Amino acid sequence: MKRVVILQPSYLPWLGYFDQIYKADLFVFFDDVQYTRRDWRNRNRIKLQSGEVKYLTIPVKTKGKYNALIKDIEIDNDQNWAQSHVGMIRENYKMMPYFNEFFPRIEELLLKQYKYLSDLDIESTKTIAGLLGIRDTKFALSSETEANYQSSTEHLVEICKKHNATHYLTGDSAKDYLEEDMFKKAGIIVEYHGYSHPIYSQGGDEFVPYLSIIDLLFNEGGNSVEILAGSR
Image 1 (tube, rainbow, N blue to C red):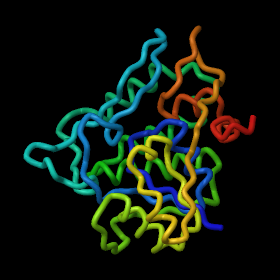
Image 2: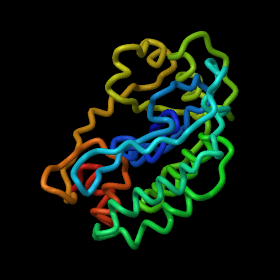
Image 3: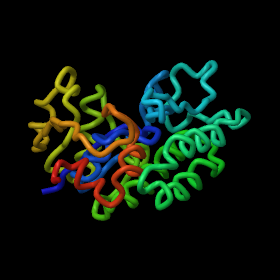
Image 4: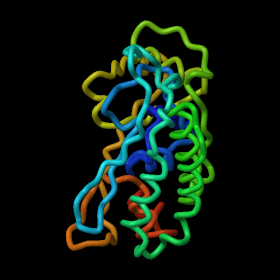
């Protein structure tokens, strides 16, 4: 059995994203599809000490690039976004139990100079997977896979075939557009994630779900992967 997951690179993704990494034998960053604005490619959410939710957004150069692929989107490093994000994270998570253990690595990632958004997203995701203790999953880029396709589903099928997948794990929203017969003809079993968001120890009076993975990491540390995978 070889389970493949194919997801677009995202900025400090939520728990469900990392659960798919955890469940995959191979995780493919889907970087050669059209960039979508106001999406998770360049932003995510953290919880403030006040209990409110704050978006951290990376400024990108999209003017005149309506059909640009994710891998070709550049970060606007003229703006002081990295220092701002690091400061916001420090201020709102500095009292969390595992902040001192994990913050230096997160800070290092964000302050590194990247030209392309996908490079930042991919390196930070792989690094955080390591911090979570996810060691067995392999990673690849869809842009490194030569594929001939006529539809979005065929694109996914071709990537799976190139990597000898027996199972394709995807999010529940894919039920609305995925042409499952294409996978069946290729001998690939489609699995839907069906993720149930866990509740964990979190600062503040009210639990807020669907935040960036760093919220879990700073609050639960070494227990994080068991929590996000629903095994604790």
